[in-house]
Image (cartoon, rainbow, N blue to C red):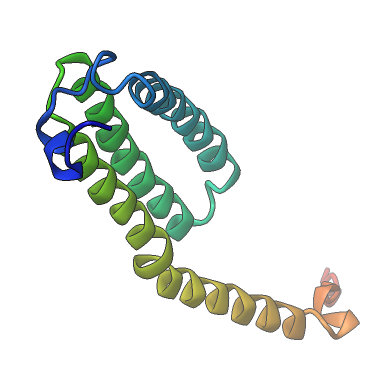
Amino acid sequence: MTLAPWEYLFLAFNSFNFHDLFYPIWIAALALLVLLLVLYAVRTRQLRHHPPFLEMYEWMLWTGIIFYSWLVLCALFIFDFLFIVGGLVVGLGVFAWIRFIRFPPILQAYERQLAKQRYFDRRRFSHPETTIRSKASKRRRRR
């Protein structure tokens, strides 16, 4: 380290200036982008009947596409390190906001709705004769 810490922010983000960070950051961003696409495809297929979870995964998908693509593009076009640090702070902050602030109240309300629905279904079908059809009364034939 030959420069002051704030002077590194204005250096080009390449393998020469940041030889210990350059390859791990862009390779991890590319790998996480692919992992995010696979995870989205799998989880949306599993949770297709639960709209709040689908909405959360869609938010995570678009945030991840923007965030990880930004890191790869910054490495590809050799932006200053300031843009990498700023992108990391904003991207990880948005991920944390989505997962821990925006969606927990929505998911709790949905879980309460499902619990209430299960309770009323159980109560409705708790009596054994509620699922048995009553026989239609036989009509007498008139001649």
